[in-house]
Amino acid sequence: MKLVVIGAFVALLIGLVGTRYFISLAKHRGWGQFVRDDGPTSHHTKRGTPQMGGIVIIAGSVVGYAMAHLLTWNAPTASGLLVLFLMAGIGFVGFLDDWTKITHEHSLGLRSSEKLIGQTVVAVIFAILATKFSRVGITPASYRISFVRDTWFNLAFHGTVIGIILFVLWANLMITGASNGVNLTDGLDGQAAGACVMVFGAYVLISVWQFNQNCQFVSSSTCYDVRDPIDLAVVAACVMGACFGFLWWNASPAKIFMGDTGSLGLGGALAGLAIMTRTELLMIILGGLFVLETVSVILQVGYFKLTKRSNGGVGRRLFRMTPIHHHFELLGWEQITVTIRFWIICGVSVAAGLGVFYAEWVVGGP
Image 1 (spheres, rainbow, N blue to C red):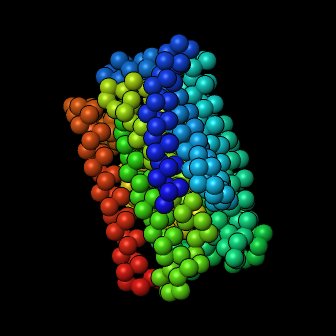
Image 2: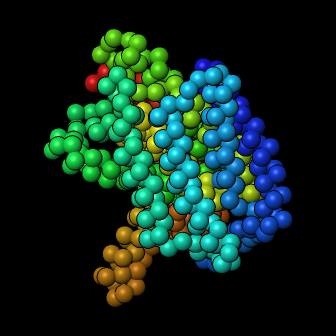
């Protein structure tokens, strides 16, 4: 547990202090936010606010993880390093998007196809490596689709090569969905950072529980076949701590934004933890807020296209604006009110996810 505490504390310190100095650097360099013209008019006051704060979150997570292992003289694990690789790799794609916005001085960064290609390359490398590094017969990731633990549905049932291809596709779907979900949620001061504190905090608890009930040490039908649960707890604690420190400066009125660097990186880390802890479908419940934001956009676009075809080329909208937090802004809710109420939704989702995880263990496993 020393690893978890040290990692979280170091990441928190870097997130808190590092963000303060990064704000000064970003102001000096002119790394300011560009606000979309079709967004809520209240957001125009945010123009010029320093962005790319996700660099501090990722750096805090990586340094916190490294310091935890150095100070306790414990070797890092394949699982922990792979999740950090995924976070940094997807975050780098977000950085390129943010940097394009800054250099071209507009709110549009990389094309969606360019983003997707970058995310796919990182996800494929992660997925292939995650099926290697076997220890006592357990690899960091499993070919079986998981809910609270691995289910009966095995992606490798057609053979090794096809299994690898199916797993890579499945991992890509999870990583793209999670990173874009967090990205869509990051539209109001502190909303995504506060939500991530709760979700990654949940993964600290899940990973510690899996360590205490691991099949390597406990012989029972309810034990967990997870390769490096305590190290995954360290990664989750580091990300949680870095987000906590960053939130001090990102809370309304925000002094800095995490940008796509942070939101895409955090989504990648979330998907990586879900894959490694064998809680892939449980992530949908734990990240309920991210799912809500994503579904609102899908419904808006789908309904608009459907009504456009049947209404003489004039589409209609389900919401005033998406992601859905903007809908409530346009209804007259204050930004801070939307953020806090969406935090509540996130908290309820996290509580429900942890409840399902624990209830499955109580009733005796699968």
